[in-house]
Amino acid sequence: MSAKNTCCVYLGEELASYAFGYDHPFGPLRHDAFRKAFYDQSLNRRVDILQPVKTTQEVLELFHDHAYIETVKTKSKFGSGFLDQGDTPAFIGMYEAALTVAGSVCDAIDRLVNKDYKTAFIPIAGLHHARRHVAAGFCVVNDCGIAIEYLRRKHNISRVAYIDIDAHHGDGVFYSFEDDPNLVFVDFHEDGRFLYPGTGDTDETGSGYAAGTKLNIPMPPRADNEMFMKLWPRAESFIRKSEPEFVLIQCGADSIAGDPITHMAYSEAAHQFAVNRLCALANEYCDGRVVAMGGGGYNLDNIAKTWTAVVSALADTRAC
Image (cartoon, rainbow, N blue to C red; front, side, top):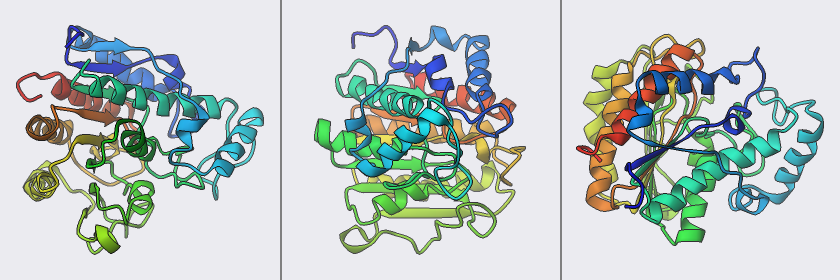
């Protein structure tokens, strides 16, 4: 391995620019809160810091419809109106910001496949609600879906495990790959009866040849670490059966107690536990390759403590 550390983290204002303004829950201070805690805990000594990377429209269109990306480009010039029914406002420069989010995730994939690193973390990423043809839930593009398509088409890696522990169901990933038997999907989320997007019931297990390859685990409001860890073995066993070639995890911090728009009660220990377990699993099946994406989270203190706990787990060579 050519790098001095086994984990890389992407930091930079180009990533922070994916934000909807200071008065919006998904604002620019999310990146800064993580970065400050990252340096305060001296995590820069345990991982390599990489600059964000911008990709191309062609890569976005591995997942997204061409017409939709053209709409994003147009609205990006003027920054007015919405890309969906009212959750995702346009902002000037959003196209370039989306290129950077997706580009940093794809660059991390390249580096792990090339064995420069074993694990990677991209804080402003994990935009799991956007569909192939439309934005949704603060997500202009779906870098998770792009990552899955990129693994298949650039690196010929078909068996991908996608794990999502954000409070919101990763509906943009689930429905885009619902009939894909090679994507193993595991999602712990607040029950859709209480939280956007209202999907992810236990009976949603995949369709057609992919029936049984998707595991949705809706959690009641105030679900805590004890409940999460009690249910985790079921998820891990489910993932192991697929013998994945690559692991993606969306680490939304909005499932931590005190988030202003959700009702969950995990602590950062739940996220650290999940990442530790996935790193151990990845060591068995796919050379330790784990890309983690920040996801949601709208309490800055929660973001700081949760994403640093994730990075600490990714950098722990005993687990990874």
